[in-house]
Length: 239
Image 1 (cartoon, rainbow, N blue to C red):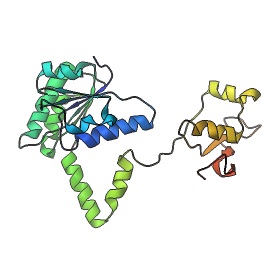
Image 2: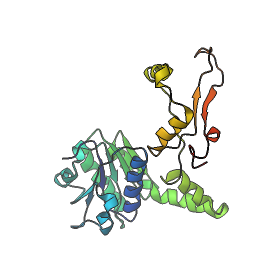
Image 3: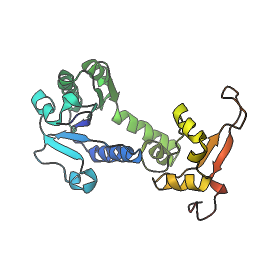
Image 4: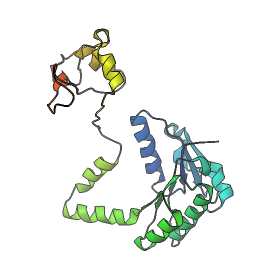
């Protein structure tokens, strides 16, 4: 069985986008992501046949039955995502599913999509601690209204929320790593350091080091050890 994975309960119109973006986020951060999907249909949706979703497993069952939830190892999941499958009683079914999930796992983080704000309190009460209610319907309304006043704002929202695009990361060395970097034989020249990161699919923009003779306690701007634009065209082909 699975352990420490993500369980998706319910297959709705946005399920493919959710799973696709979640997998892409993990891959972008060089982490593995295991997802188990529980849907009401006997056969998995067609989009799961793509090789991109090869690490996603699908099981058929009723999300309101503990026996069926066990098919996606809900009791061992790190997080559980609950999506509505539509219909007039979607929120009621979501709350019922959360009650069944909490009977299996009181400790996992549970994220659920509730359509109507009037049902938010009931959903939180059913899930208890570590339950996160997301009102997709109201959120969509806010985005549409904002885009009506500021045309094109939806593209900015998508860029902020989706995994696509380029991210900028900062990494702080711990004391042991800094000790290794201070050893003369461990030092890398800027071009070699840039190439080493590039082989891992990471574009190194710069590395900062404290100026010689200054103490960690002094609040001074660090000197630039490596600047992307200092490299020649062969070392930095994307400049």
